Amino acid sequence: MSSGLILAGLGLAAVGFAGRYASRHAKTMGQTLKKQMDSIPSGSFSKYYKGGFEPKMSKREAGLVLGVSPSSSPAKMKEAHKRIMLLNHPDRGGSPYLAAKINEAKDLLEKKTMS
Image 1 (tube, rainbow, N blue to C red):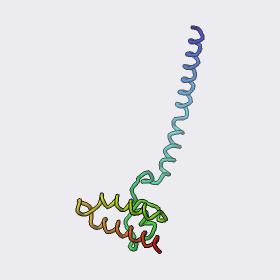
Image 2 (tube, one colour):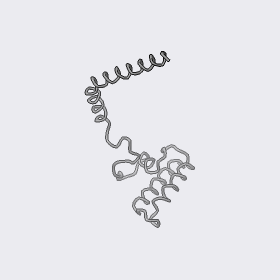
Image 3 (tube, rainbow, N blue to C red):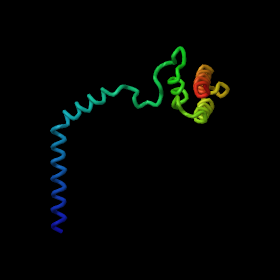
Image 4 (tube, rainbow, N blue to C red):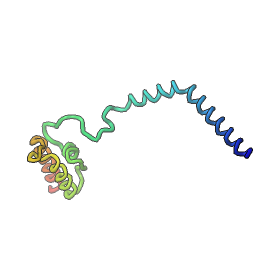
């Protein structure tokens, strides 16, 4: 019984010391955390690409459009193209411009792997 009381007392003391430490250093920790959060570029955690299309599509941009690496296998590119086109096809309410860009990306990456 007494060992349980001793453990409870030690636990309360540890919580008290931790609370005192947190209250003393909360202001500096908050400022440091705010600096770190401000240094992270906005949109870093977004899965969407920010920015428009380049005038002439590059391999990098084609990979971003399809969501695959420019050096990925033709089967993987074909599957990614199919998946994206099912979501963005003009006959299903998608944008004709986006569908054209998706097809352009597929053609560019297929041409690169064939040559």
